Length: 456
Ligand code: PMP
Image (cartoon, rainbow, N blue to C red; front, side, top):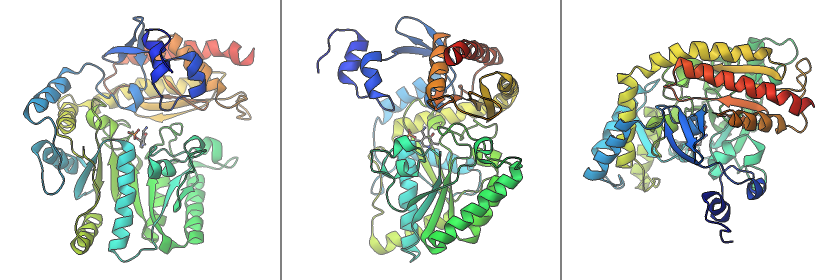
């Protein structure tokens, strides 16, 4: 197909295969072209401004146009624009970043492996877990549990971990040995009258039953986002991780915390693991590691996992895993500068302050006639649209209400993200209080405008 016109929109339709897009609808609808960004706002090619209440895809923590990150990239580009760390090579940006991450880790961690995306980090974690169990002489202990509605990426293993139908259907996934446990969403999955604690107890019992049915000697690890992001911002019930971790410990199953969204202050502590009380053996992170300015991700592993891998490599030689751009020096330099800014500007303190009005305005939306539930903590949240608040019935078909509100928000200068009928908010961490109010004012306008569309 060739472009029918010279506009960027027509060339987009002619040449771009879009990720995560309804490809059929895109052929008529075309793209919204974003031209530039400044602070918490992005601007389209017609000059319209939008408050970016999703920080792009949960990542641009410092907002757009942070000159220090531009300078850090330019400086590193001039000095050593690209280099690998295979076969005993190394460079200071990679070393410095690894050291920094180990210092920041929520629990003692031993080593850092670098990749380029959250998906690659999680695929790496899967491979490390398999390598680790081979090293320990337990070749049968390889199954990995993730959760329904969890999101861990789209590469073959990470998409298998992801517990969302669209990531499996027609892709012939999940692959063997990846299983899904129940989603800890109290609003949707608790029994009538079941308390959060009782629901958490039941989930832990169900997990134990699943492990026993599979055979504990075959189950290697459990992957969890502290708060599920792309599955609809699901905050687990009180006492959930405490109970889940007791089960994992009993059967010698590793815990992987996927901190790709929750890491670096999003939930009001530095790591989601700290907010939720997780003690992971492996931690994956990405996105806000570099404020989303360059692709970089990291996998931190405990000394026990690392030591077993070293022993295995002693037997078989090279640890046969790594990406050309593992610890890319420019991405690493930008990540280091990002972490320096977090500290210097006390971004965590700022998140805690601004989370107060953010969560207050979010909770207030629970009274809106279209909203069944609001959920969130720190600077992440979501609301779930329902046709009937009493019965929690969805609008039919599921996903339409979310799409309607999404479009109306965009028309009101606000970018949010619809996941089914949940509307997520995850603004840049640097958002100020005035803009928090702007976000909720515009969202309320969109919700009000959606009533006649959905009920009319
Ligand atoms: N894990 C989580 C929790 C994520 O939210 C995402 C991306 N949204 C990923 C992994 C995958 O990251 P990427 O898109 O960079 O591969």
